[in-house]
Image 1 (cartoon, rainbow, N blue to C red):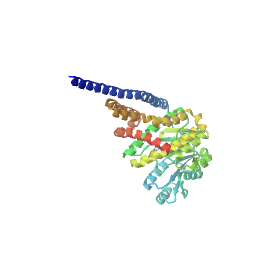
Image 2: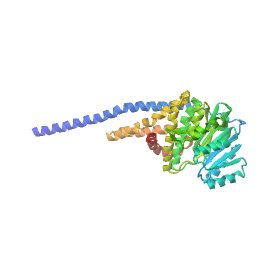
Image 3: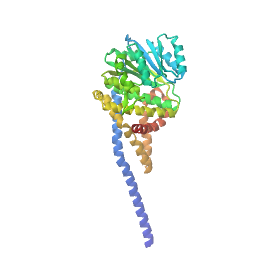
Image 4: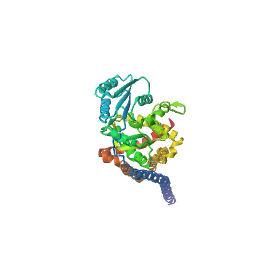
Length: 399
């Protein structure tokens, strides 16, 4: 009998200890839930604020401004067929001149542009031996003779009337730069579909918010960046010879020029009724390398802006840059909690988190889904890669 009582007591004690352990595990998750809830409320509050302010945004209706326009395109190892398609789309918009600055080794594109020049007499060719995109952009802008200069990537295709729409804001003499909306041209691969989602997130959320809150933007993307020529000419030396921590800066020319123009006191605006298209990277490996390069460019430009004086005269833009500094860290809180819920075998919490991700991410990309409903199939990949990109952005900061 004593042995039986002793055995039953030990079993009871083990049961109590297991219960205490389970309660402790649940308690740990509850304690973790408090900061997760606070951070989640903050992130959703910021998102809602952006959406509400961005809802006030309206693009300017196109007006014949009477301003002359130059298209400047740097070209290096572009697919000739895509380059020709892009050239024809720009020509249909009726610029006064198209200037191509083509690397001397790219014989196919030089030949393609010379053929195009036979039907577009105002086409000008500059064959360059200077390495890098920044010198090519500078040479093209110096060669331009018009009031407005559109800097365009060699694979970017324009819709009809893009030029009229992006030039209209320059009727305000204080406007120095304008950017259009962008999307991926006929996305088919997973990388292209994800890129298209992220472009819509950027232009429907971040850019609309900044455009409605003030005449300032984080970046006028180099796929099509339109500037007043008199605004950019004094800045070309700074663009070409930019340095960061003593090193020559090669990439990130579009964000650098956007910040230089704003730092010089010019307004910049967004025209969401003008849309241009980029093919995007087909392979995921290429897209991931692009994202890493863009993240490094963003860190470099944002940190320089934060420690400059001009940013703080634009409170909405300053808020956006500061919020983006901490966003990668806060984004990783939820997956950390997800891993802990599995470790502590709190599978109900795991299921709740999975359901929340599906619902919340659907809400956030709803604007994109209204345009392209088939993208719902990439929602799981978008959720996974959103956390991967947060890690990648942290890695980019340290590299």
